[in-house]
Image (tube, helix red, strand yellow):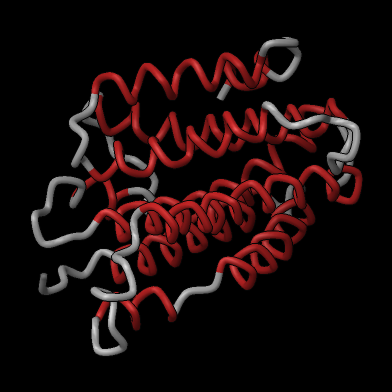
Length: 231
């Protein structure tokens, strides 16, 4: 993660991350599960970057640091898999099933959101506190902004990738699958987990165990999201 620490002190840090996401988009087939998530994520990040900054939550330094650390977690997972190494458990379901013909685009995208908020956001808060030498309370505003970004991502997924009302009926398994997961609850859990992990920083063995179990639990949820569904 040394690269992300350097990026947080670069005034074009977020632009650098966006450029990497664009490069990734250019190299993946459109139907690839990572490509589906990356395309929607990139669209939300670009839209957020065009909005006025005056009323954004969190100071610019903590906001940029958290956003870069957060995106780096995702990009590093993809790079790790591309190099044939073992990615975090939270990303493995999407990386393993990214070309499965029985999965729908909305499943790919929401599995990515699940990994990003349930695991990456937690560790990004800790990364940011270490980088800026501050407490979680000092980056809470930036955390909520990142959560709002992911909420916008979920909303775009439902708008762009969900079937229309004439196709998505109450009996459709996708309706039940998506209704079983709440981004708002996931965001609340992420903030609690980040504070807990930060409190364990002086107990490295326990902190490592906590992080591993969090990763595994988020990965399990992602695997369920990627259950193949009938057309």
